[in-house]
Image (cartoon, rainbow, N blue to C red; front, side):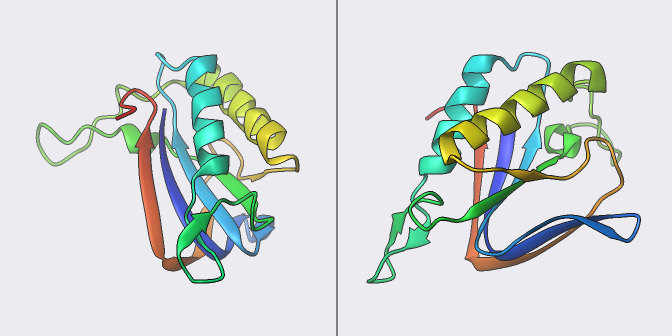
Length: 150
């Protein structure tokens, strides 16, 4: 699994002119899923995301997690995170899972985040044409690949 984590002052997801997810302070998490992803990847990433210290403390030092600041999370599926741009100018998405594999992994990932965050995680709609709005705070953007845990 690949994720792009953005610390936000606010974020939302709109589908067909209707807001389906909306948060203030927290994280926007874009997630790309591949066939090799397992429950171990899901649990490891959920733990990392909820505990990563990227929010400022009283001295404005990044020492606090989304849990510490009582922040919220929006998760948006994004198969394009697995784009291969090796050949030509048209990306290939061959590594991205098809919906029948990706949807159960996506749903399990959201549940794992909720369990660790101890509250509801908002989401986009898997496979929908979504408009994602955000006010990146910092800006702070972190990219994590569960297959490369260095």
